[in-house]
Amino acid sequence: MTQPKDLDPYKDARAFYGAELRRLREAAGMSQCEPGERVFCSESYISLCESASRRPKLDMSRALDEVLGSGEHLQRLCRLAQTSKVARYFAEAAELQLQASFIGSYASMLVLGLLQTEAYARALTRAAHPFAAPEVIEGHVRTRMERTSLLDSPAPPVLWVVIHEAAPLLPVGGNAVMSEQLTHLAEQTAARPRLVTQVLPFSAGAHPFLHGSMTLMQFTEAPAAVYTEGAYSGQLVEEPALVEQYRSAYDLARAVALSPEASLDRLVSAAKEFATP
Image (cartoon, rainbow, N blue to C red):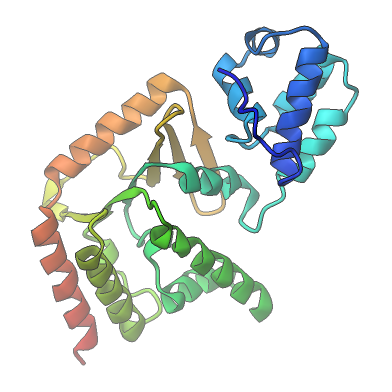
């Protein structure tokens, strides 16, 4: 795997990091697999970092600095490349979503961020940050709304969303906010051919994702990855065997969920219930 020759190192901090990593590696006379063997990462990870397709990690940059004899050069560039509007633990996953050809999501109690309305996102943000200043809340909401533009990109990913039946019943922000959110989700599902929404009913019983949410991202030219998230933290999973375990569990969740047609009816029904005094 090699870095594209037309990568512009001055496009952004991550591209400059990739160009510098490649320059240092070649100056040391190493192939892409050699530094990976010394810092216990794959050749594909080095390739993805050099092509600016992966967000660099500080611990890996520290190890690469040692191997390549570059002092703290890559560590400093890594800190620049990690700058993001979103929470640090979510930043890499947010960037990977922009590159994914398929995004599969499961959420137990909430509507996926890419499909949230502004009022719903604001209610969630206020609940998560009850002591934050109003301008901080609005900053988080703006960032979340900006991310929804992914669905309107020239080549949007296939987005397959599974939500538990509890999510359309939880009155986030009150009845009016929930009615608007569920109507929006139903309308988006009906209007977008690359969006599939399924509701996992209570009757499905226990399942692997009872304790949280997860997002599976698949790419045309890179290994799949999974992002899992809790209230104030998240984790990007890239180990192939574990990613495959998540993918298999997600396939089972889709299999026992309501059909897309029945799911759409359930969302419309729930929206009407919230709209009824």
